[in-house]
Image 1: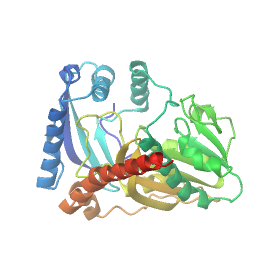
Image 2: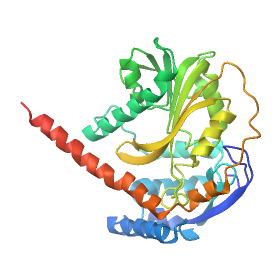
Image 3: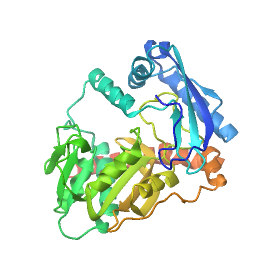
Image 4: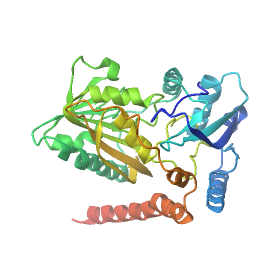
Length: 367
């Protein structure tokens, strides 16, 4: 674990403290949890944020955990901090680009050890198992958004598309329907029909293999060193090729690390996400923030499309620093923005789910 490090997105060392979270070993050993207690804790945190229009108080502690969260807490005390009974993690925001990280920060080896532990402790189901009609509808919609943003950047002829970290390759369905050749890099061994797995990771890739397009969907928030990975994906592209990347936009009056501090280690702002790709040698052609999904859950996401230039681009060391007001808006959003966020993530999706369910039932009832 590292206690001092530059910003992974822009290499600045201008950090501003945000929050402190503390965890105790006996939390993940507690017997069960109640939904009422969890909701009370979450509502208390949201109320503090809304009332103060700022990150929650100096120390946040969530002792009520479900089984998923307990397993992640075990990573803290059994893998990352084996001899500790109490741990405090402090989040900090880069004053140059708005990226948020926490310290101590895991290294590549710490991330590897985390996944080894989780894989050994979790019974992994077959990714081909049936999913609910609602989730299938949402995932197909997400795949279509990726296709609509990425495919127009490229030739109208059949192209080679690589999905990095794409599990079973379901994000490639629209490309398959378009007649494109689809490839996958992932540890999952169960792919949908038409998608060919070629490696577990970039280190296993066939030498010299190049693609017209790469998809990197909900990967970069998990890795210790995102810049080398993005550069590696650039090297997999043909000259003039394009990449689609997406990460959750989780910065809203700080970040929520109370229940699960190990799944995500990078918290991007739109500016820091764009800067990461520009530093890796890409020309960003599209960037946006929208409401997306990950499985059934709705969340705000940052989407980006970037092209590999046909000629090398210059150093980006002189990129302008984010205005201080922009950084402060990430930490102190207006109350109307907070209410809009809650509506986008919790209220409208419930209404949409109900609408989809009614339409499906109506369709099924037709002779």
